[in-house]
Image 1 (cartoon, rainbow, N blue to C red):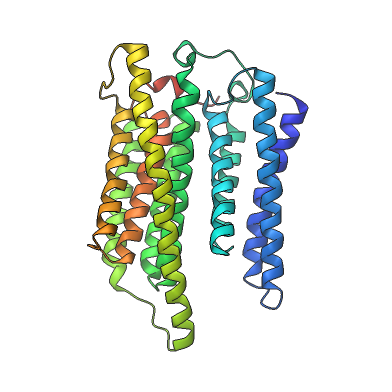
Image 2 (cartoon, rainbow, N blue to C red; image 1 turned 90 degrees about the horizontal axis):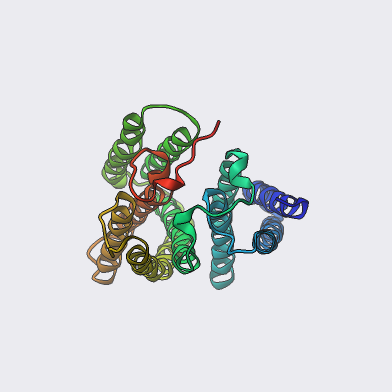
Length: 338
């Protein structure tokens, strides 16, 4: 990897970290809050532009489409999260979602930096990836995953603004536990069954607890503040839906092109491989979200938790099947450090 790529990628990573802390600091800068939020937004723009150039530079150096291993996919994922947030900020005129978006991007940069050097280096493609289908199939999936993450994060903010603090805490703890299983699966030799139980069992238990805690609502005697938070909750509910409305067709395209690639490579459109089956489960979860929202069969708060469920399924589809020992035809992407 060239010095230019390293410098640009480091700039993007540092920008995401700085942006996160400036977003957080804006909550304590009441008098200058808008100015501080604008600084945080600008820092994230710098990171987004640096990462865009870094990805293009990597493609030029590799003389191929730069999306072939876990490290490169993490760069694309961070790029899509940052770009998706910047789009949301321009459409809705909000910036508070930025601290979660920048934290997500920073986490992906950190995770990527811990990967073995073989992931960072530009190497020849493994035989399974030598196909024009790679640049048709993979980018829509990565961007859809990023939009689903933004939807889940917006769902958390919706619950927060709606006063469901205990439910938010349980949901955040669930996501953290799932992410912890991914990290352990990547960088440790813990038995895969324990990691799968940690992710799947912890996610099921955490979501059940989050749903049961929805009835515990924060009381606020200030009617004006309550009205502001209600409007904010409605806005984040709409943002969550908009993100899914973008991510869902992209995931659909990814699944269809994946089937076409599978038929080209293996002679079968669908083989019930664990990862492709999980992608189908994720697709069904968002189809259910859209159905429930359109027909207004669930409250906004319950829909927010459905979006969080989708985030967990997306995390399992994207990283879980490469790190938690599920195996399958996509296991060539499994990474173990050391």
